[in-house]
Image 1 (tube, rainbow, N blue to C red):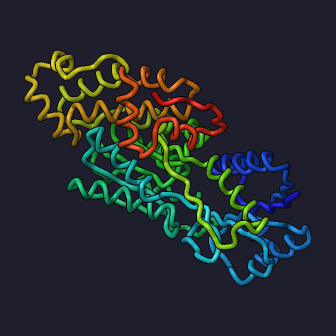
Image 2 (cartoon, rainbow, N blue to C red; image 1 turned 60 degrees about the vertical axis):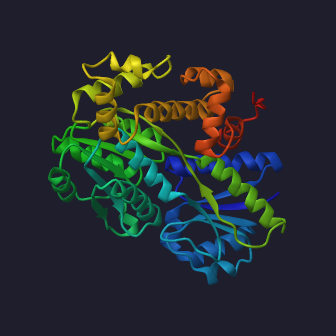
Length: 392
């Protein structure tokens, strides 16, 4: 029986989902023995204390959330170690990391499609997950000719969740409105929401807020509830467990990074508004949102507003950056993706629920977007997926 020492933050939704995945893998290979070690233990006793604990318990491996990694000290244990990277990735150990850059790109594309022209990022200084999410967000919006306002919380590591209401409030008040604000994670998104309430800044009319991790508790204690990017965390934990097993049994000997990918955006009230300036385009966007699952043609959309087809298509592209056809298809693909990983609908039923009448067509389009077939995508990203489905 493998003995795994867990040095991580057990209070966050991210870490809990990560542990779910690790435990899921451990049950497949025979129950492992886990020893939790709270982060404060390292603060009190330092890394030497962690090493002594691991030796006394005779741990076979460690999964740790460390801001700085003392490789020489940890290597003294001569056991596999997976580190949830914090300040940077370390080539000497296996990193549990993420596609942070493309998480930022996903956030930018979401807001751009909703018509935003003002953008802001609130992050934590010194953390790679915050820095690279900001880079992806900035890259995508600057590519479209817009600028990004940035504020970083630069408190010390042990105070990273504390913040100065006055500094944050003054910054939020100074931003041009309406503004699309992407926060590095849900903790920071909640800080924005709380500060907006204190300073009577309307969410989402003045500031639309999007976080990361989809921590259900944090997102829903916010007023209004926070939209957030869902990450493939539980499967990341499962893969971390698998990697640890291979390292323990010497199937592999070199460090190997596990990348947690962004999947979908869980939309809540903090981003429910469109920021387009043209009221007719707002009408069209709202109509698509309510009717995407039905037969929806450009001809039908033209009937909803006092515009010719040519004028409507031109204005729509100006406001959203996409053609009507592209926007509808992208919207439906997003909904189809959501159903694949959150429901047990058959592939055919999920396609119909998303507005696709021809499953063969949606399968072809989906593969173009995701580089996987719908069945392959579901198998990879839906937790506890065991359904074998046939592609038609």
